[in-house]
Length: 479
Image (tube, rainbow, N blue to C red; front, top):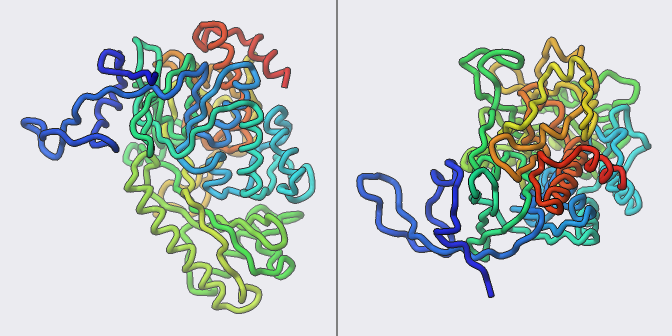
């Protein structure tokens, strides 16, 4: 018999959840609320509890997939919920095609790389570069992640969006979703928010930071507080001779900016000025290239209209830029777009408050922690938040002084809700530190640690912050 979560079961909603309720699929609109404009009251209804597992992971990007696999391997029953039609997030739906900061990352990151390599889905020479960055085939990545999740026993639900959280006091007990199946609840003993934007945590009432600070490190003044890094829509390109265009992507023995500057000059020769002043080509293999040549400024990744407008603008710009190169003749005469990403890349969203906050000082001091889940080598990487000031990468005085640093497990445990962990770019950190740890080579070990901790908490009937680090380390060491 299907269980239902009725009004009595809604013990506590996060404030953001209550504010966001409106028309939903499968429900009928009620009468307009008295003394309110532009609002309707949705009739109360029971919500079926579709499933109950030890661990529920929301979001199936690099962090979410890792969290789900790690939790399942640790003996927990796991539900993985994803809005899109494939696992992988920015790796697949976003066509990123380039893993950054994977060096010395063992466990699942290493296993994913090995599985890709076995399917000829990884390219270039190991160790690729000093930061362990490597190109991959996004289609092979989809299959590898599918296989690894299913082999671990993860219960996957695609095409499903998390829209609300249910709490008993401080503890998250259910997430509410919307899909073609209607409105459903998923119960769990522990939850991991890997949505990138901290959606579940925000719905559960957790405090968070968003964008540039008004003062302190990373500030550009009070008037620019809240600005976020721009979106980028990636695309795959074919029809170009690798030798003829090598100067536009080859980095070996050259300054970092040299191939980017050369490509920018080509666009200008075609009479075009790309929105990203450091246009970048990643060679996947001889017939396939990933291009990042677009910036969408002034957008918020938690605003659906911003995402929509940015996607439409970006796709139009990508086609215009490729058409412009083609008009130059060789070596661009036969250039062709294979695909633009189904999801625009969002660099920055909510940074949920955790039991530890990773600050830029951690980077400057090369912080080490007893409960370190990974060591970050990638430095400060802030894509300009304002087109009026720059269209490239911002320069920060701290940039030259940063050192590899640890991300502690405490930064992955939500401060304002119990039974909730975080992984990926929504963990607890400041604006500058976030620009470093946000890359996907770090998201995977974060997710792996969060998943293992969630599984241990569920099995021990305790909260994540009560799990002993030695037990988490032992679980991760068994990988």
